Image 1 (cartoon, rainbow, N blue to C red):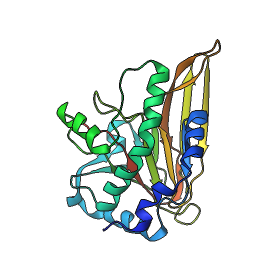
Image 2: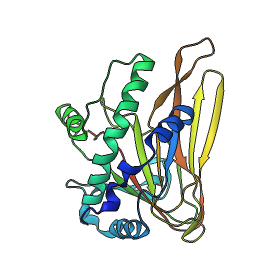
Image 3: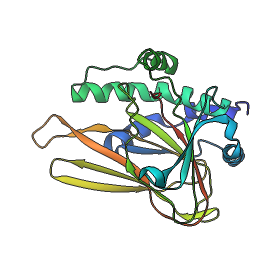
Length: 238
């Protein structure tokens, strides 16, 4: 699937607004990142087993119900282009968050430079994935941590049409810190992406400064139909 001008629409997003939402809530919606035909084309690739390195049945591992597949390298061109084009916008946010939390790690300007760091540490398996949910399926709250090198933001793109292809199946995110918890349900339309925190983010402390908030994400139970999602994780796995 060759990249199109629509594949580059990450550069046309309102990144100042996205950064504000990430700072405030730990997640932000990118409306219309993919077109309906692009979504349909990606969803159709789910059945091509030879394109993937692994298939995970969630119930076997206590992850929920449903299944997902990790792409093999080389990634489909659209997935590769989205991963490459989103990263430079997210790296400055990730670096600022680490600075606020007193974490020494800084992320390079390009995705390839960061992947070179992952691969040198033995994290060589690609992590972009496709997820499929049917009736009664759900994804338990979790964090996508695959090794020493973790990029603190990732993306999920809804490929199916809510209320038409499926009902239920909302993207859910929780935040917990000292003495509090909260949950967000993030509404998405077909082609929308949600950018969200992988593990932890800075939040204002009660006495000034910043403290860590732990973040987890999942998908609520699907009530009908079938829901496909593409996931973009920027660090590779061991």
